[in-house]
Length: 128
Length: 391
Image (tube, rainbow over all chains, first blue to last red; front, side, top):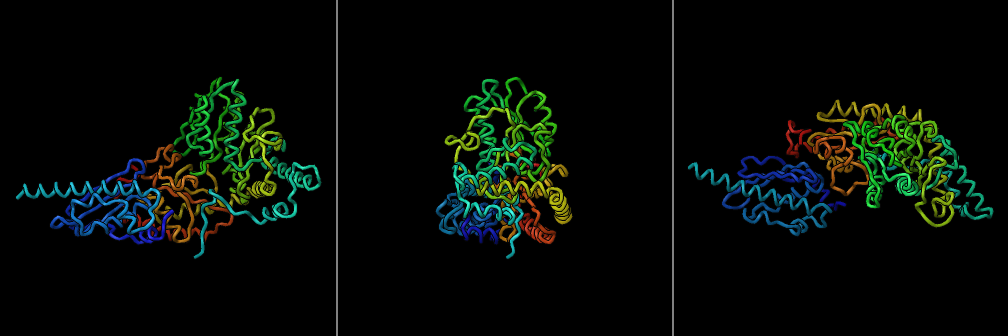
């Protein structure tokens, strides 16, 4: 069901926890599975410098969230919500059965984080 | 890495006593029991002995036992067979929301075929609502099917009360006893149980074999069509070795019921106490006492059950989330949902099922691992302590 790459990342996920100094975050709940994903971003000059995650989810959720945080590092903020199945498959190989819905949830979470970033930015500029 | 197996509600190993009885029928005694020659007569005799052992184990006549490919077939057959053979009397069936999929999916099929099915609610401990049962029994009801003990949470139903309520109305009562053979004593005639399903591999017998008891006089249509095996009601060449193993497994399970249950219950209660002592935000699902002696189903707050199960597996400890039949499915457990648990606690549930060979030392290792893994997963969790049980 899970390949060795998935298992290894699940055992020792990277990028776990609250990202200190983050300037964006998104949280989503999948109503069908009740899996919760929260992603924190640190954005500088329009690029993601660092990201971390927390999740209430299964093996796929933990492995894919950890991988997503790796994939988006260094990417333009406006492009991160477009990461797709192929991006994950390139890193992990064959993906688990439920990966489609987890990746969709990750993209939705990133989209909310991006919106949160621009909201914070606008608020900051208004305060100046 | 030494493995610790705590998934005995999913399946159990074949005991040596059972295997020894089966071996001749896998090797030298290969006759078809339907054949009239000596080889056939020998294997037919072996089937008769198995039928007698099972009948003795549950308190019925051997002629009331029909062999099947397992409890799923027994459950499918009893619902389909009794509903169809009695549809001139009525087209209403009552079951509960926490039955095994082999009952629930056949009920869905029967609904598609024009039968009416009522799915009874359960309370927070998994007991079927008897007030609803009384309310829904009517002159159109031909069958009530309620499992003896739930495979996920282990709650043992008030079976005698259910049998009395249904029996008073003259309606047929079936119970799926797959998890309960060897855990509670049955005397189906005295208890007023009209039909009962059981399986071999849950009680240290072989996989792929089970039995259905149907009380004499109850009309049931055949499910498998073909030859005249099983009194013309269940066609197909008999799985002789499997049936011999099933008979022996039932004999042993019912013979050793007191000693096994006493030992396993003590270990179960020790295990629950150790978990509660060492890990906070743990909630035992099901009734604390009126439960299968080998079942421990616990929701760990803030923790995803599948992740916990997999982490345990990577440390050589085998448990399950939900029922084994739902692996690969991301749907929340219908049983825990019907019991009214919040979604986060449904997702945080893990089932540990012990056996007569489980040791205290093994359970201590599991608790040690649980402490570490739960702590690790809680660090990943976005759920706050104050949110546990509310999501």
